[in-house]
Length: 312
Image (spheres, rainbow, N blue to C red):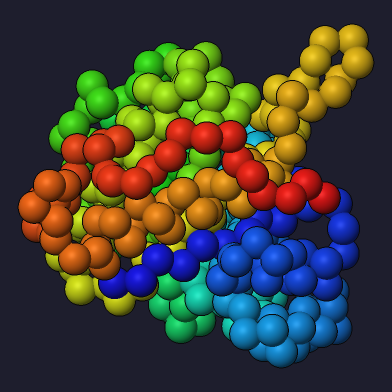
């Protein structure tokens, strides 16, 4: 299995051409983000991706942005998904990653919605991967578990950072739910959360080593499940972003870290981890099992240095 990493458009302040060029600079395999709003812009974007040999994961939010319109009914979410999914197809996405539903819905409302949304994606001939996200239907582990049990074909985009802040703890306390999510995981958002927030100030900081180690253990579990399911490619998007996620100094508002640098560092680190687990020759002094999840944080040759990627 191969790991492909994607540059997020969340927090990107330049043009789409600049985002695509940055993929080559920082060794990303493609872009994840919302498709351009206008039809002609989507055509131009797709041509730019194809010319650079880049893949695209289309991000869709139903009935609003990342936080939904609280008053929107499930039918409005469904129509929003259909309309935005149809528009995204012009960009020839690998799949759709979907921020969907509402945390205030009942389990049955969510089950009905996701069942119909999967039917729409099937008609369009594209996979839909639904994200674990605060304010949405998959806002906590236990609701997610109950919905997944009723929809065995549903695919997940796993962003466990949200659950860490919702539950106010690292979610190693929920091994059964993590195992179920690993079995359904189609895609991963590689952001590190902690008990008081969805994004640590810097994942390389030693004071957040426990949080990074925990997340890497969960991602490794997902990779092993994907191998067992016969997936040829695993996809991952480092998704450290702005909008209150990025820590800033009080009064000045100056960011404490560089998002471009952090996301590039995370992509490089996870590719190295992946190669050490799945693609290295066994070493009798430091052998990582090919059949069982590796103990988090014990893969070889993973330095704990500050990232050295060039700042923009």
